[in-house]
Image (cartoon, rainbow, N blue to C red; front, side):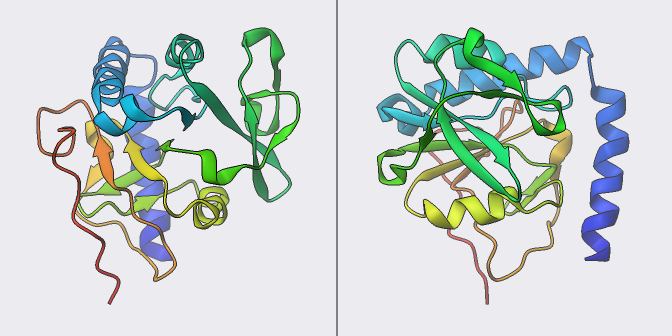
Length: 196
């Protein structure tokens, strides 16, 4: 637990230096280009994305773009859980918990229809382990959609040697970043996580 706190603190300091920079915008564009070129994303009809915060890969325009071609879901914080709702346009968004813009409307519960999920994180490792912000929202959501293809989305500085992982943590199938390496290559998914 202490290692996770230290890692979150380190990432917070790196994000401060990285936030609102030209580099962040360029890297976001490159990451999202790799995401939309990924075969699993191309084949998907229902995609769970996230409406980014200032220190995350900027997904706002990407959501608008793909909502014309795919059914785009976004998470909504309700208590200790994430509800999923259909994105129907910027006019149907309201500021929710943590200042995140969230869709209004009915809750989406057909989890079996979700083909692809882009997952934000504080840090990822090369085994597909993810460190979140510490509230456990995705830890509770992901077990409800175990078969869905999961892509961790992050900046290169968020890739670390090792993310402390528990037996219940769910690994990403791929990590997409802006570096020209195996993590962002759509045809080289990560090996299955070893939880022994």
